Image (cartoon, rainbow over all chains, first blue to last red):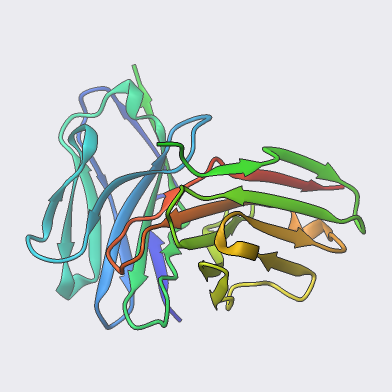
Length: 115
Length: 114
């Protein structure tokens, strides 16, 4: 079955530390890849997406993610986190050819940034 | 542009009762999706509408759940009768036509079954 695995459920960092959140998926075909973020008290927002082309994708607020097809991975990175990055982050995959646009989410990673 | 709106934001009902959740997608978005997140678990796909038609309902847990989108505008998700395991946050999302369109999410409805 198709699935998305996020490596860490909770991450605690100090401001200015670098961030990398791991994401792996299981599907052998073509996929669209996403990272969503949910800040406290807010709705899910799209952080960045990959459909095709350059596997290094830049999103909002200084985030980027790299698609490595051979590793079925789409890790999220940020060189220097801020207190305002405290949120829950979701990796998501939409497999092509599923007859629709069903999106499969990971379990989420809660990031807490200490000021 | 107004985002995806969901109503109510929070619903608390007793086991065996009926609850109806509503989702208003972004105007002009033909695709509408329902997802559910049970506490601490991943967000799981429930179903997908294209306009008023159900494109994919493979994620619906059982026949106590009924989703409709009459007229292809807003959608409702009814749970009847509600069971304890139905508690969670129900998200609605919408997107424009086309496979490469991102989904825009509502704030979710937190459903608590007592």
